Image 1 (cartoon, rainbow, N blue to C red):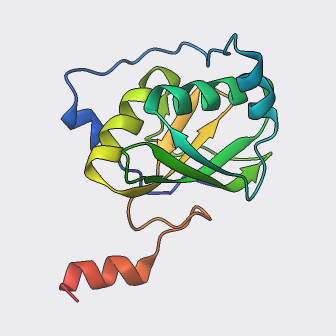
Image 2: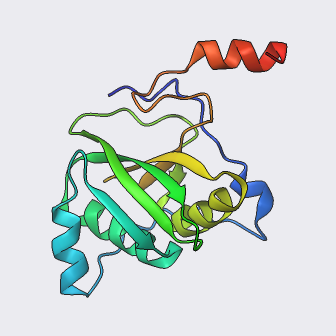
Length: 154
């Protein structure tokens, strides 16, 4: 999947006290349950009740064990926890130029979850992730109709 031209949402960088440009790799959880769960993430998998830390741990662990990028539709539940659905699994991908490093994923999930009730994120095994803009479709292309409507106030 070519995400290279995808418009990303990096507003979380402006909402935080700081961010890291840290090329640190994804870190695997020591929890055997998280390790097993991370290997079972496949298209259509739905998960509920995840805190920011738990979701970060799961995605980070998945990226240490897989060679595929995973795209997730994430929503804030009524309790504030995340509800997640895997909507894409790609063995080939090109990350957008404005992708971010693994060290910022937890902060990005928390801050984006505060400002947007639903968003799409892709995590990749090369210690990169990106949050899709509100106009970006899960397929990695822009929803030009939404952009046109937003520009014209329709």
